[in-house]
Length: 368
Image 1 (cartoon, rainbow, N blue to C red):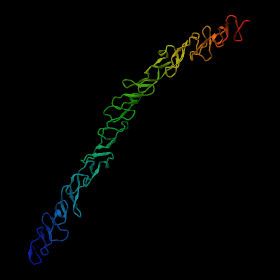
Image 2 (cartoon, rainbow, N blue to C red; image 1 turned 45 degrees about the vertical axis):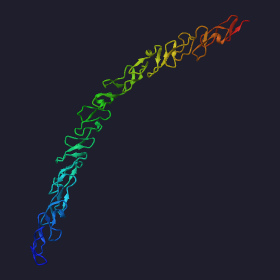
Image 3 (cartoon, helix red, strand yellow; image 1 turned 120 degrees about the vertical axis):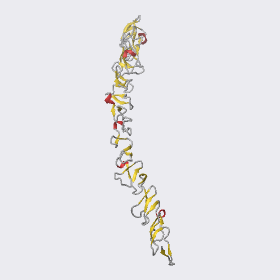
Image 4 (cartoon, rainbow, N blue to C red; image 1 turned 60 degrees about the vertical axis):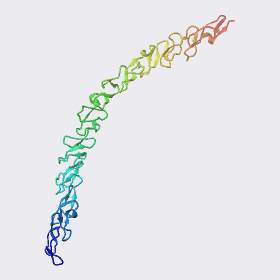
């Protein structure tokens, strides 16, 4: 008790347990109350003095216990501080230290820490990590996987940097690489399993799809030589793209070339490379515009036309070569009506004239 202004003894305030016997100023507050900011006969409730405060000191203006998600500062202003955002499920209610961490964070090596640190702070390529203090990565960034030491390792280049994030097993292969098996962290060069393979399937089939020049993939996906008489072929389909001399493409083109005479039995030689075109024909024939051999003109003496171009070199009886660039002959009488027979070559010489005519200077003239 203490004397009031009327000199009467009165009790300490209800918020106060112990007060000055002379002034009534509170020295010890009641439970649930704390010292006022300045000397006063009345104490402040914990929740009034401090936001989120559950219990406080009765002799000092300090919060001692805070609501969940908060902790009391141990230095001025002794208020309730919110747990750090990196802490999961709050923090230690006395110290504020994180007990568990949110996803993507891990406890700091200094266990008495108010914050957690990013997984990437100890492993640049780690996205999420264990929250038990082991500092083990549980999920790596794309193109990385969790290696045997629980750190993130880069997927192998032969996998085209694409692999399972947990095992590191290749999920695809880079160009010109092929799977070794379904549980491998590397792919194998196509040429390592088939020396003539340039590109292969990117699944587990180990099939070649494009081969080196002179080869093509067969039905089993193995590279085999281009077909009979092919000097080159499509490296994916095996269809012949050029043929050896004296051979031509089939019609339609296939994986083999055939001998010239197979497509034209009158053909002697054909165009190099495989085109179905005759260059020279057997006697009595010459190559037409279609590339096939056609018969010399009937006015040409048998088997005497040029086998390259069909120009007549000699003619049948009573015919003469029309011109040095002609494929036909003309009747002797067509160039001289008095001519009975003439040379069958280019000379256009008279051999015999009609009755009452005789040859002179290349013409048939009448007898005197």
